[in-house]
Amino acid sequence: MAKKEDVTFLGLLSSIKSKNFKPIYVLHGEESYYIDRLEEAIVQSALTPDEQDFNLNIIYGADINDIRNVISICKQYPAMAQYQVVVIREAQVVGKLNNKGNANELNQLKHYATQPLASTILVVCNKGEAIKGKEFVDAVKKNNTGVIFRSDKLREGRPVELAAMEYIKSLGCTIDDKALSMIASNVGNDISRLYTEIDKLKILVSDNNRITPELIEKNIGISKDYNNFELEEALSKRNAKKAFEIINYYEKNPKSNPTVVTVSVLFSYFSKLLIYRTTSDKSQEGLMAALATKSAYRIKKIGEASRYYSTAACVNIISWIRECDIKSKGIGSRQESSALLRELIYKILNA
Image (cartoon, rainbow, N blue to C red; front, side, top):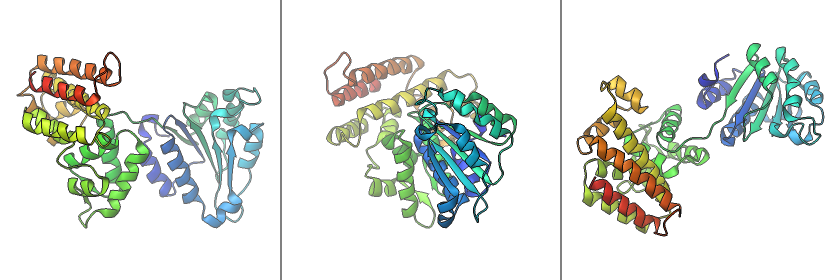
């Protein structure tokens, strides 16, 4: 079985849609969106709507008094279909209501995991936390009878861009750096909204399947001229006029341009700039590894910005960004977040 770090959402989703099923899927973690999408894909790929009437068993954790009843269902053969699907939803509460202990109850599945029925697909959905049935999980791994997928939430910044890029690529589309930044910085780390907006754009792309800033501006409502990508560009060249034009736009459109997102983007950008200035390996490969990016364009842009900001300036700017972040959340300041952002931009330009 693949190691945990090799099991990605898109890779697993592709495998499921290709009907390369495993007898057991353990889907656990904080991000419920991935878990829901994978469960839905398994059911729809393994069973037709008519087959679901007799071969789909959805069991909620709170309703499980004895896990042996679930095992008994798993050992049944499908009715006029190749597979039956057994889904345990909310596995995190299994055993809690009858005081048996969540982990101990789930661990009884370890015996089934050693030799599961090939015609049964068991899907265990454990939301909000890591699954506690270690013995069950270890049995799945040891006997290579399933897939363990940990569903983690996205972090703000570059990981959101990477997730967006990977999903766009999986849909057969392409996107440039500016358009990618527009989506990532304005949608944020809400993976459900991120994928929904990309799905919308996929329907609207032209024959070349390219997602452009113009397409995003027209259909998602993000300005192609006044956004965090353009703010980065302006600051990287110390273009005060353009930077303050963008800040003025943000002040007039606060709901579309929340300060917390802009501050997060700036922190990520100047952190990368500091890494660029201090890393010893300035080769393309070394910089890509240090900056966690595969974009030669982004490496080039950060390199150009490094001519305008010294290492000491980057350190000071990161400190100011942190201060702005804290104050914008009402800690130690009563200033409007827009005023705090304007002050931060002034400091950056004069660092």
